[in-house]
Length: 342
Image (tube, rainbow, N blue to C red; front, top):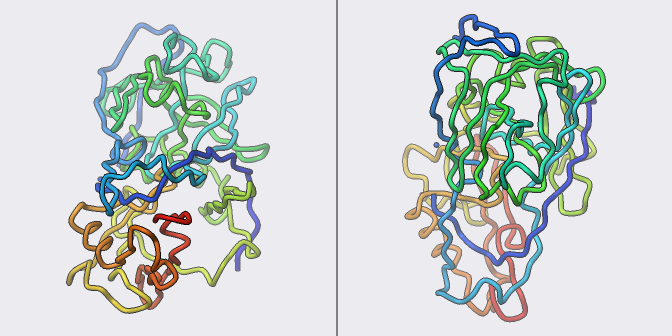
């Protein structure tokens, strides 16, 4: 039976875009350092495979300009968190495709950081530098369209009053102008598994669960275009469900990765996933359905939308077969149209 958890409203970023198909990845104890300590660890190098990934987009009906059709979509959702004593407020994107909390640091003076709120360890009585179990005190992270570098800290973290724990995170001392100078949120709150985190106690969901702050060890995300999006920590809201809950086992505890038996058209298997099925990541930080080029090409050709959109009414529902259930998208869900084109 579902309980009610803590609901946080999410703000959405709207942009115009045309329809497109996209081609496309036990901790031991750590040493804790006080602020100003001279002992330093090494620097790690990491790559985020999903968030801010530069996606190769192709229009399956030729090279017509995307700007000919202005359709407004939500492409990112973010909310507010607090860190430090006294608390410092930040807007973060809730991203299931990464595993760390990343915030701009006070000493980051560059275009990628300056538009945002910045974390100041000197203004927090509970903040301190840390070294992870690999002996790293800092990291460099490459995204598809940018990069950051920063130092590891620990501090008191609150999603809301009564849901707080001590966490470890990255305070970015450098952020590339693209994409960070234009993001309407300050930082990233990774909700992926600890395999994606920088070390012990860097995983926010694990820390909230282990400290008893996250009822049922559950969070849910409700995304909509009408301004009522929210993330719920500790349960879900039954009134927001479009159907019964479909549970799928996580096949690899890194991303929220699940198995899809096949892709269907109007409930009929297409065989696009082959005999071993498809592996997919459920990712709140990605705004499009993405996949390998050959699979996306076959899917696009199988849908068979005409360039002038004259057959839109007869396009199939595209479904994802998970266990005995098929999760369907209607043509209105997966394709944009105007009076003259799809």
